[in-house]
Image 1: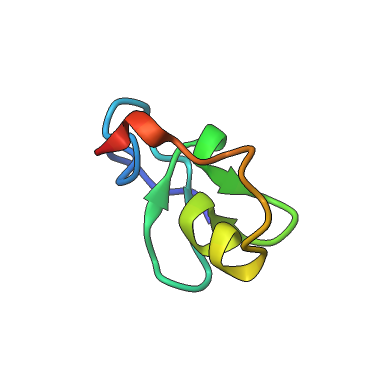
Image 2: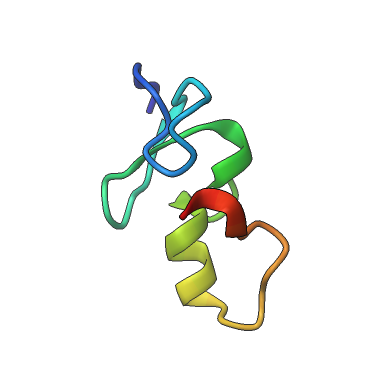
Length: 58
């Protein structure tokens, strides 16, 4: 699903997708297309995964 506005995770890139789980609008970097999930939901689904966590976000 295509959306418009800024990524709700990094707040700097254009959002291109919406998370199937939580509805967060996410840019390509913070969206797992294969899972249909934003980076936050994907990390919760697989807690051992840390490759797409933006530690500078906070």
